[in-house]
Length: 149
Image 1: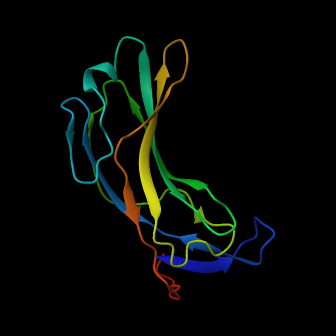
Image 2 (image 1 turned 60 degrees about the vertical axis):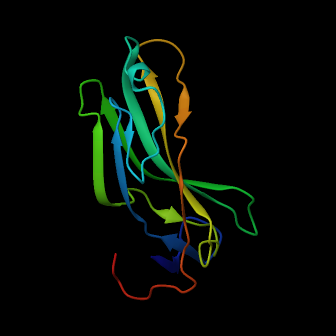
């Protein structure tokens, strides 16, 4: 779903606002992947002695005529040591606004969603890990005009 709305945060009068609904399934401990899972890492090495928590985030990446690379974080979650390592999230809506700084979402056929995470250690460096899978989502050629959000 995509709308063209007034954008009071930027220099333009109107910008595209995207709404994304998504499913994520993952089993970190057993390494089993669902169709829309982005995990592909040795599960035994995720929560070792120096890992306090994981900061998971879903980002959208796409290009427009104005910008070769656009990246927007849509959703995030903190997974603590001892939390259920099996994610089964259905019909999730984006947690943050998906604004483009113009009209780059309309008709865009290659918006790529990727789940990444930061390993938050008890001590030491903060590594960034990106899942090996991703999903490309085409956006419609028309704007939604009803107030369905």
